[in-house]
Image (cartoon, rainbow, N blue to C red; front, side, top):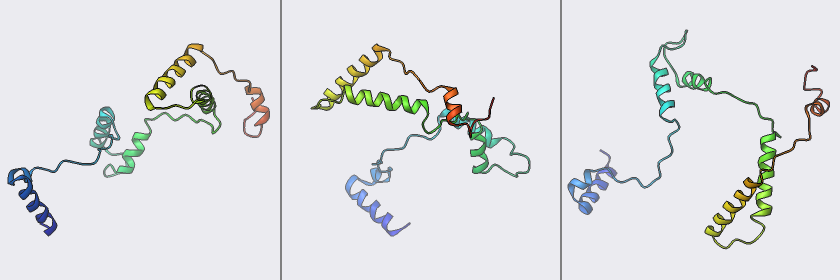
Length: 147
């Protein structure tokens, strides 16, 4: 044992008694959320216990990560994609309607933001896209293949 460990144990024995000193000290930090949920962890264990790919003696972390990533479905979203524009529009509307006045407390903010979101949802406004595929093909003709 390290001298510092013995000193800490002696101090805990003096403060709490010999039996309580042997119990693990309570954690002071907040534990992180697990990276995988139960189903993902079960898939990982199943994969790690299966036969490794041909040409490999065993599973490595890199092989496991590569195999798990293959299960994801990737969707390319352009930098100026429609979902981003919609989110920016909604944030702007929220700021102009709900945050235009001074808010005195957290409770008042929660009340006003819920009411503002409810009003926005009740109006059922839709985003009208004026930029068409044909316009895009003209503007980005070097990128898109011609049909």
